Each structure stands twice: as structure tokens, then as C-alpha cells.
Image 1 (cartoon, rainbow, N blue to C red):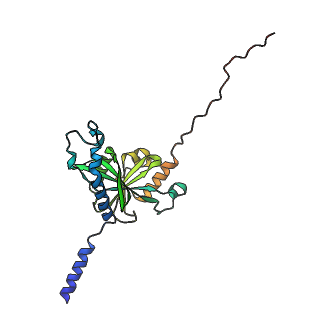
Image 2: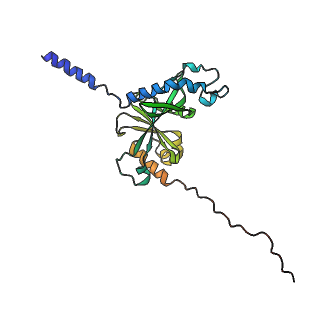
Image 3: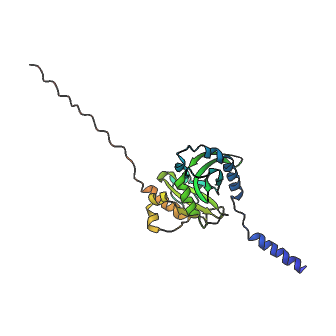
Length: 232
């Protein structure tokens, strides 16, 4: 009986040591959808335009494969329209993914996948520079984490996000070059990664300090015609 209890305890310990990632199944479904339409989009690349999509004319694109998806997240309307409440998550998860196209171990370009998991479709291909940056920032991250791409369209800033749970409490927000250019606080702190609260605060400050583009005032037209002298 003691031996049976020991085996049971050992089994439970082993099971608990493996965490099932929250988006693991979703990632597989998204990758399958991207894989099914990969050749269609690669065939659209015209001869002489390979470099625009991260390839050379000597690459054998038939050997391309898809990688782990990056799901799009944005801040919700409450974030933009009200004051920040500490420890509040203002993120909104979108039904869009950027899926890397990999050849010889390098991210060459990204496929955009849209829709719900029961009806996914590839809507575009592009983002060669973003693909390179995402591969660089993803190095060393746990592949079992959910990967996200946070986009702040209002200031053209992006973050790579590695999330081990479901609440973003433990997520690592890593600024991409676009964020470093748009948010001055990132250049002062110079940390490799940030928490959700830190990012929300810095983005809010950047939005507040964003210069307003005012339309130039229209000048009143002046009458350049000389008045006729009265005939005596």
C-alpha cells in the first residue's frame, strides 16, 4: 500500500511539473492555417522582388516552414479615454496573428492570419524587418509561453510580449525599435523588459506628450488689384 501511495505521489509530481501553455492548441491551429496557404503567398512573389520579402533569387522557397505565431494585442478604449487605475489590465486580445516564415533557421517574412480558430485565413505577407526583430527578441524565451505583439497605433510603437500565464501579470514586455523611438522613457530606463503596469504608464505619458499637429491657419486673401481712380 505504501509503495502504491509513493508511485501515486510521484506521478502527481511529474504531472504538475508540466504546465500546459494557455495558447498551445490555438498556436497549432493558427500554424496549420498558415501552412495550408503558405505556398500560395510565396508563389505571389515576383521574380526580381525577392529581397522585398526577405529572400534572394537563389533561395529554395519550397523549403520554407512556419513558426510560432505572435498574436496581436492592443489597448482598449478605456485606456485611452480615462485615467489609469493601478494594477488594471487594459489589454484587448485580437483575432489576428503574425506568423513567421522560416528558411534555413531565419525568419524571412511574416504571414498575417485573421479570424476565429474555426475559420482562419491568411490575409497578407510582409514585414521583413519586423520578422528579424521578433526572432532576435524571442531568443531565449520559453517556447511554451504565449507570444504576443503589442501595437500602439497612436504613437507607432510595438512591443514583443512573452506571457507564461493567462493574466499578463508575469508577462515580459520587450520594446521593439519603434517603441524606443516613440517613448522617451524607454531610453532613460534602458531595461531589457518591462511589466504591464510599467508599459501602460509609459505609453500613457507618451500619448499625453504627443505633439498635436495643427493645421496651418489660412491667410486671408488680399485684394492685389489696384483700385481704379475715379474719372473726373
